[in-house]
Picture 1 (cartoon, rainbow, N blue to C red):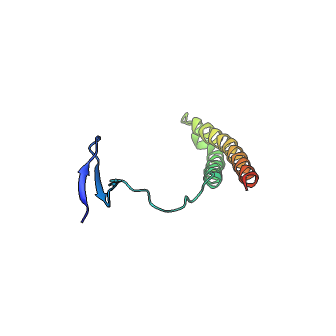
Picture 2 (picture 1 turned 135 degrees about the vertical axis):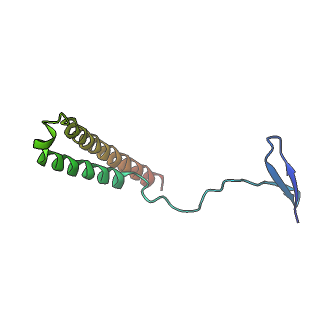
Picture 3 (picture 1 turned 90 degrees about the horizontal axis):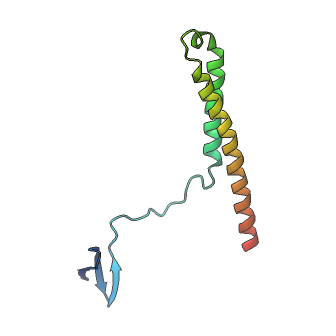
Length: 104
């Protein structure tokens, strides 16, 4: 059974075979990310804001008298920002793929 010590920062380490191995309390799970470049997330959010815009425009006659017309602008701005985000993520994906092909 390996002996246990504490390093200068107070982190437990084991000394098995003369080599020090830190005992980490948090360990990264060995799984691949679902969406590395964010394109799917940006598309999903943009579609959601776009649908919200359509729904609110269809019900605008109920929003305007109550002074809640700003909700329409929230969804419009969310859609526009989402379109910019999709463009950014697609460009980032393209640049990442180009640099990966140049490296290999």
